[in-house]
Length: 174
Image (cartoon, rainbow, N blue to C red; front, side):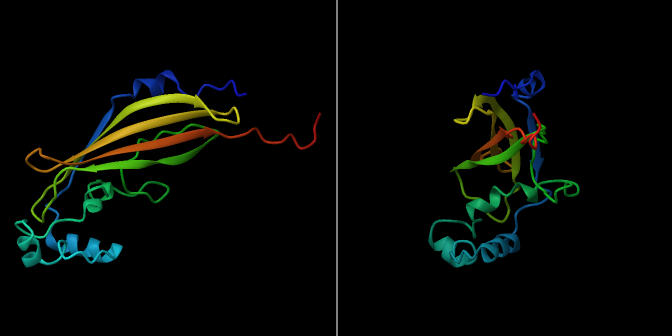
């Protein structure tokens, strides 16, 4: 069983930390259409204004997952791994990061004129032990995506799991 402690005072102090990103412009019909085409979603709500109006919307609406793609709100260049999106930049030596998953709750559709703001918050950091006795750190963050009026569009709860790496074999040394 590992005696390693992954939940440091520094990480514990980050609980409640937030990061906010606002899109530089409204979503736009073209971005909505391009995203739908890129993911292979041919739902006419995303591309056909008349169809969307016939189904109770003022205009086309965005596929819900488009709103959750934080990279569209991020300022600046990609990171060293080529990632452009929200990251907490948590580095824990001798661990493996596993994305534990996302849970989305969609509240309201977004149209072409919607300006999206994403506010991320570290909700919890907890230490556990794996069934193999290795230290494991679970970071839970929550994101609220709102429109320019402050209305909730969706929430995303994301789980990151840092698992201690097993010690390397000593190569036969005694």
